[in-house]
Image 1 (spheres, protein in one colour):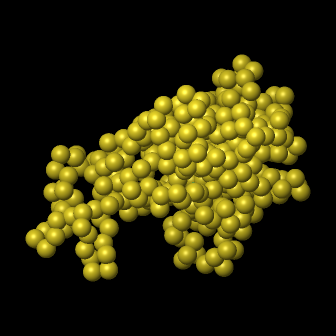
Image 2 (cartoon, protein in one colour):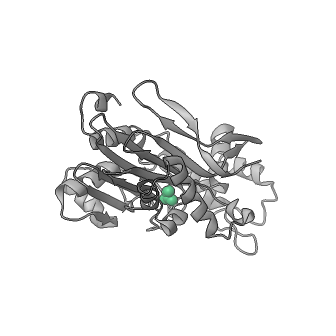
Image 3 (tube, helix red, strand yellow):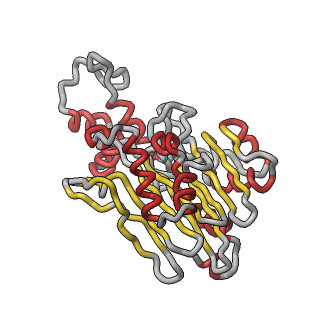
Length: 322
Ligand code: GLY
């Protein structure tokens, strides 16, 4: 917001905004410290769209770079392509001076190892744990496996092991000249198959910006968003007269429709959409009203700053989490 106020381009501002979290080792949902794939390697996805020039850039499954949003912007600005993936994206980043870095923090490595050691085959066996001579309860076994790790960190790692998150940031901006931009960045689904790409780097799914109408993006289970091309769907909904909130709710309903609106199947995942219209109206909608933590339901929220203090607002939702 400081950059937008001082006249910076909206794309520079949103990328700088998400860079703060991408570079934060304590955030395990994007960039450095993001939870890794099933082999313990962090693979990141990101894309950007610049409203005024109507250009886009994207990287998928990139390794060794903390800030994939910067590389997506470079793809947009410096190449005749829109999307680079995997090794090619990493080599492109090196060509622009980005050093190869280890993105796995001790915290995310621990969460990965706890996940790996908690897996079982059909007969309940795992080669990464001690075997027949370990008749301990899962928590006691964990404590024995990781004797030097404190209880709080172990509880965090166990929670991540059994609830693999799809944390992501989608950031949309509009300035007083009416210019818009957006970025989406993520480390994707924790423990994914190497090479799995979610919705975040896909223009039209994880992000879409049309300077004439507005912008939209998503967080949550990317597979569901890809199947409805959520970002583009929401912008088209707004083009045809829906408010940002209605447009996001319509996208959520399309996701639910793909499961015949069966709450039991929908309960297995969550997904949220965000939209900002060219006139400044904004909204968000999510599949479930909230997340459950320690037996409490916390509402799904999104962050807004319209020039003053930042605040959190509740998302509209399709189903109430009880
Ligand atoms: N929405 C992030 C992902 O599914 O990878």
